[in-house]
Image 1 (cartoon, rainbow, N blue to C red):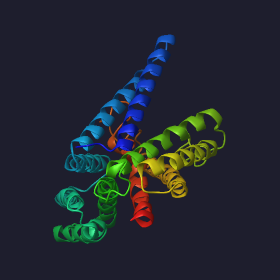
Image 2 (cartoon, rainbow, N blue to C red):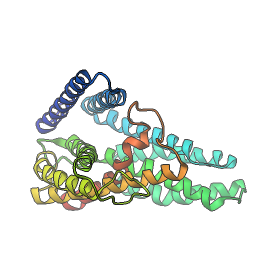
Image 3 (tube, one colour):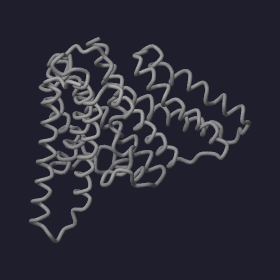
Length: 309
């Protein structure tokens, strides 16, 4: 598969950033041997693996990339069900929640937008409680139904929007459809990093201390400024959006990424856990790493779809 020029350049830039991060970590660790940098080393190593797998799948072919995102949805749904309390009788219902994954991503692969957009919010939404009724366990019914619906919406429906970016018509031929995915993922993850850096450097005023005490207004606004400016530059290179629309796309990613982060943090605080899992060394679980993308993916997709398609 030929990689479009702008997408290839974006991949090379991301790899260079990882090289810089690895070298910086090595120098910091060498100059401060008394400190433990195990978590930082694990985080960077995990980023190498995640980026390598993503770029490899997108480079080999569209189908491989769609399968990758379907597998990520499976891991995220499995992780969600592993941390939230469920009833014994719900196990027979959970099967139908998992079945939504191959069907949803099949609709992506055949570019059936109409069914892709309503399959989970309507058909799965109605199917799951009916299956619960047939089992006959009414104790805790509302709580269980809410968990089922929210789990599938977050981990399958929302994340599947990333995969659908790959099958959209290529309106920016220099970047191709993979440019849309690279833009979304890079801007979302860089938004997390920039908010963290600004918060560490200038953060004094907390936004929602009961949910996420490390989130500050300085970090949020500094990240907003950084992301909107970078988005205005990268958007026209990787997407069909103009510079002005790319700036608004960056603002949307900044705000929705923050919301995704604090929503998943609220879940973990409610369950009294630090991480959603330990699948990704240095990062925690799938939900820890994809929390922001769960919100940015559908919102960016529909913003892009409205203005460019």
